[in-house]
Length: 345
Image (cartoon, rainbow, N blue to C red; front, side):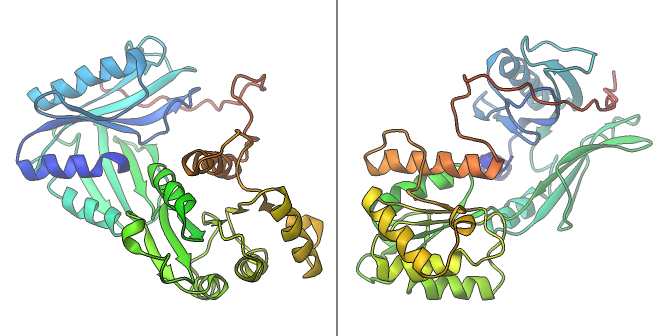
């Protein structure tokens, strides 16, 4: 739902009613994760997605009906056909549809404000209960919780947890940083750009990013001391000047937790960089944490293309994948059988 928060908030303030469809559980499919949502406005406008194909067409109609008649319900669908099914097997999803308006979700502006401020918030929604008047009730809290469907003795409750977004810190203010900011924000990262040169570190040149003028190693030290670096943090070094990047990488490679660390450059820059870091006492196991040169081998040349290659490598590192083509042969994923939710039929 995070990607359509602004659309939901506009609809809420308009005083009109739309329909909201949310994936609350998936079995044997990774097309879209649990929590993905689609909003259908009062005129039929669609925002967000729950996977595309025939399933999305079916769910669009269900959400539109929720907006028009106020229906709230939990349904199970086969992803391949988009049709309702009663069986729980591979390729099925459970989707909750509900009307969305000021009346239906009066607390929503609080949810939107907390997400915008990068603070944790969790929304509990009753998606099944024997009493239809209870279905669709919401409760919000700042407590940490996983995003999942919970079966209670008398209700099924969907828990949507919105943690602060992961952070990408880019060192080096240039055209590559601007392109990387755009790509990173598309996948939900909060972006900070740091450069010691005031003439380059201009906020107007990097819309959507926080821009800091400071020496890179000093700024990273301050973030680490403040506890603002964790296992979800990504760092990309775009400054090829050794006086900037070697002190910075020396600190970064000593951080106990870091999601992704990369440095841009050609083969000559890479060779010099690794020699300098080895001379600083780093062994090969530690240097293996550094993605250098940054990015997947896509033949990227322009800033926009390089940004795509770096984001691709970041995603692969984050998920523990190789980054190879999905069409290459891969072992089938393991599936875990789960108890079916009550559908209230």
